Image 1 (cartoon, rainbow, N blue to C red):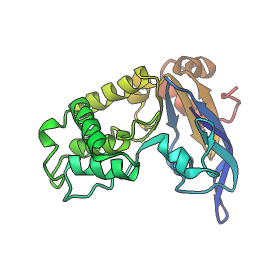
Image 2: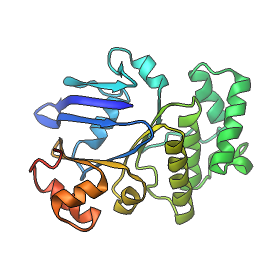
Image 3: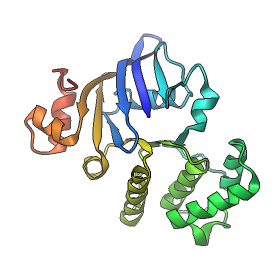
Length: 244
């Protein structure tokens, strides 16, 4: 479970996040939505300990992210918007490297790697350098790297951005499989079709604040809109208590 309470972050005179609070439950896909500049990326970076907040707390399975960052990182798998793969390493070498960072021995790392390669359809590419891989293939490698330590919480930043139809379908199936395993999945996306297809719950952020929080059906009902996209536009245009 991921819990965020009263999170605030400023950069000089710019308030990027202003008192954000929400929960992402186990066995639930929670979407974090908002227009550019809303504070989503800043929030995700604080969750992953890349940024420290001015005030507020983040907890991963009850562990305070800022008081015990190492313990929280062990429980969190992250697919960032910039994958940062090493072009001369193979998928297998990426998985081994990140497994070693998590204290996993070579034998278990290789077993886990084979599991992930089957899940992600990377078996034939496992021993090829990622240099020259397509965007979809690189995303799958980054996802394998994020899941190598079998985390209970998975954070995905724009996981299908730039993917073709088949790669998008594959990532969707992986997210559904993770949910069925009872994991907590939090992902950000600008694609309303993606949100409608995957999310059990949606947290909408605008101007650094949570302006709506609920299931897709609840958001449509509160805004009086038929489509999720229209409900989203209505929510970010108003601070009318849609998170209540």
